[in-house]
Image 1 (cartoon, rainbow, N blue to C red):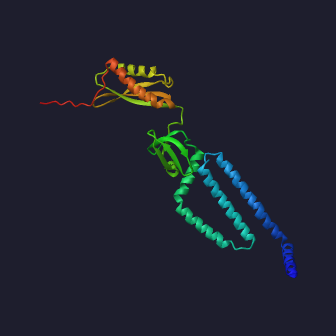
Image 2 (image 1 turned 30 degrees about the vertical axis):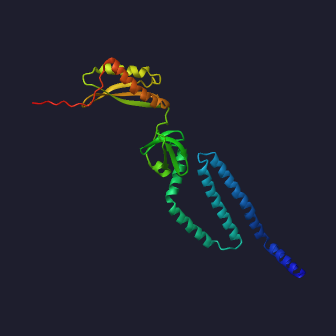
Length: 270
């Protein structure tokens, strides 16, 4: 029995003496490689937590990077041990190709999400319109963008759709022009209408003096003269002022005897 252990010890000693360089490289790859992988993953996770991808999106990307790095580390170790890795790499490549084809739409959303975060056409809290769907941006994840509509509906839009659509960002600028169309009956004094509307606009506390508000006749309608009203307001005051002007103009017209027309047809009989 003692001879067996002695022979085993001599075999192990001879192995390390004759192959010490390979053993050293193996241990370096095993230990240092593991430490390097953990370090890279930690740095990547911290970067995600400081970016717009914080949360589920950042965790997903971190897991993806961690898995990829550990696979590379494992293949390197097996290669040093003499295990044939060519077939393994081929199988992994085929698997990756199959997964990428199956998840083509998902990868498209991921790529589009990264582009959105990097280029910042909008940020969380902005009121935007994406291809006809308007709402306030609540969250931007790696796969989709969530909007909340004015009537409190949650709309989830894939990032690939967002990136390929026309985006209107109503919150990008501090000021916004308020446009109204006001109709009055034919025969009404045009200058009087303009004076009354301008008086209402200028008396509103949220009206910006520059650029100056404007009222002009723009259309001879079938039953009315149509005026366009333009006034600049701060972004946050847009809708309150819109509703205020609609009501106050009607009240001012009633006081000044300006008639708001209704649809009518004149029939002449012979």
